[in-house]
Length: 346
Ligand code: CDT
Image 1 (tube, rainbow, N blue to C red):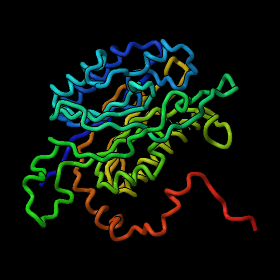
Image 2: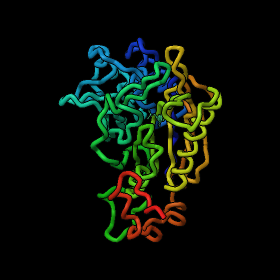
Image 3: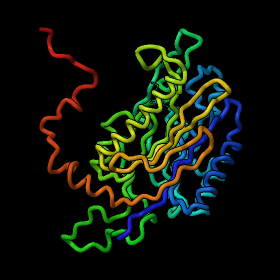
């Protein structure tokens, strides 16, 4: 049984503060059309794809802030964004799209949705759990801020794995299974979504792969030089960017291997407003931790690979066969303690 899918990361280059959402959506549609020409069936767009990465700014104007968020219940019906979903449906391509969501109760979420072209609707939603940075801006006016804790609430959906229909021919369905048959690794593909900083937290990957996830997808906006937020000493800009890129790939490759799953990462990158640099490095990674395809630019770029989900089986059945090897009786601290508690001093 073939479990091969052609997938892509749709990396998106600079989006300036004054960019019109509908113009950015046209760029996304062009990437989708390119994907269609390469027989791609699943495209992952970045975190907060539709606008500039506004959490870097301290914004007091409610009117400006409102422009960065999507306000309706159903993003596929949003006036500016609907053409993207319509294109995905007509091309038969599933998409993951990251955007800022304003819920009816006024809460802001950093959200991703999975739109199934087969179903013609959103079949899964994820809200970013790990919000990095600070609530208040830095005193240093030269610092680049990361004010996600100001604008967003930590995700309240957890890490829900889901099956995506229509991507794998002959997927075993509930209705056709005989009692006692093993269906592991034979059904429709099992997917999970993360958003940016989540990729650095192994707990998030493990919770998805405890549900059998075979592919984890995430967009990111990672500052190329965020010396106020990481690193023990200031670095020259090119060194800081290389280090940020190194860590981005390190966590993607290591977590893909340790969780025996494929992963797709998609960057919002380039130089926003000629001033704010974001790393590129969109990549598709195998369950053995190898990069199969990666971006060569920091502009709009499609990164494509053909993946075979059956390649997850050996990791899931040998080194990382959770049922045989995990020792949950020793992992209690993981869900009882948030911060560090050191042993008593000697
Ligand atoms: N968007 C986002 O989550 N960015 C963060 C920046 C971290 S700065 C310490 C990231 O983890 O890439």
